[in-house]
Every structure is written in structure tokens, then in C-alpha cells.
Image (cartoon, rainbow, N blue to C red; front, side, top):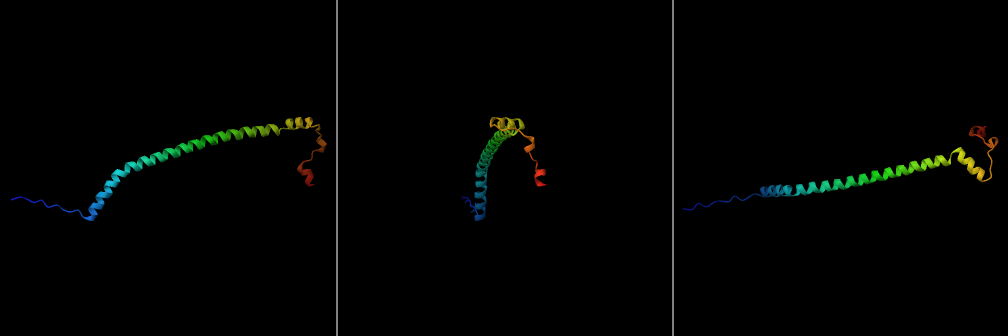
Length: 100
């Protein structure tokens, strides 16, 4: 006599569980690689932005120094003399004098 093996059919829940587990095992490494690539790209953009900020800060400092040089009393007197103007302290009024 031959023994006939009985196959147990999988229920829907079991099939769904196996399918979900298979997809999880296959897609997890893909998700990890994708997230690391995205993180790397974001870090690159952050470093690029930091470099641009540093460059702009240096430009701003340079321009601020230029403004201070041009606004100095010596430079103002030099430009005034080039334009034929003279420095007369009696013609200078402070804000306190104007309000009175």
C-alpha cells in the first residue's frame, strides 16, 4: 500500500504573511540604500550652502571695512578738498542744537 501525502493548503492569512515577509526581506536593503543616498545628497547640499555662506560673510566683512574707510573723517575731508570745499567747524550742528 502506498502512503498518500496530504498537502495542507495555506490559508489566506498565511499566504499574506509569507508574502509580506518576503517583500520586507527584499525591500529593506533597497530602502536602506535609498535613504543613505538621500542623506548623502542632503549632506552635500548642506556643505555647499555652508561654503557659500562663508564666502558671502567674507565679502560682507570686506565691504564693511570699505564702508568704514570711506566714511572716515580723513577720507571725507580729502573728498571735500578735491571738490573745492573746506572744513568749517562753525557750520556743523549736532542734533541736540537743532532740536532746541
